[in-house]
Length: 183
Image (cartoon, rainbow, N blue to C red):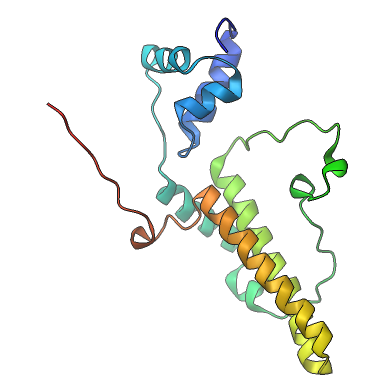
């Protein structure tokens, strides 16, 4: 990775990504932009890079913003289930994404998390429709499909919530952080 020189604009974009994404480490950023970890760390130190928000703060803002997009009352309502499209960036078919550029980070971490929360709510509404339909029709096979769908959604969304720090609001859910001070 050494030897690559970035333009001032590329460094500015790297700085913005690192400062605005609480979970992004210098090591991960260096790998993303194709420079050594040391080069990236030196640049950060030389230019005074600082993280602008923590995961808890971002999660709180994203939840508040998502409530305006899809209010919790709306999320709990029984929907018609129409128009639910899977996220094209998470398509499990590897051929479907062939030739596409890799997904870049969303410029605003609150907006990115807001979109995820809103999509999660929409997915649960669609899955709820399948379950209620199976119950109302007393269709055992349809009920099994609804159950599998709900379990799959739960696993998928749990991983996505962890990856994006969406549950950082509750400090009791977070693992303890050990700080070792040497002096």
